[in-house]
Image: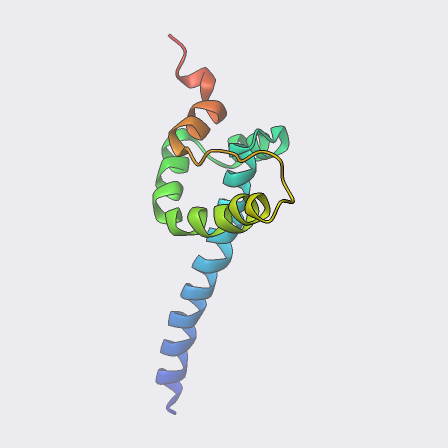
Amino acid sequence: MHDLEFWLWFIILGSILTYIVLGILFAFEGILAMGGSRFAIKWIRKQFTLKGFLFATQICYPFFWILYFFMELLPYYLGMDDELTEFDISQMILNIFEDEYRL
């Protein structure tokens, strides 16, 4: 393996792993905000503007479904949780940025 090839693979794999880690972190906070966690809503409002949050939601959308399955659906169907939180991205965005939608 040549030195240039090593750095090319390093950049490609580093980018993929960064996307996975940041996507899981962002989706985790989003799923918590979907459930009504005040800490998650506060964290998202501190880290993102509405436009940035919408962009990150589109980029990390597959992670939302994966974590929703593991954090909501699986515990519900295994009987570990009594109620199922609905997967509703638009309602989550309205809950987080409600003051920006007031007339």
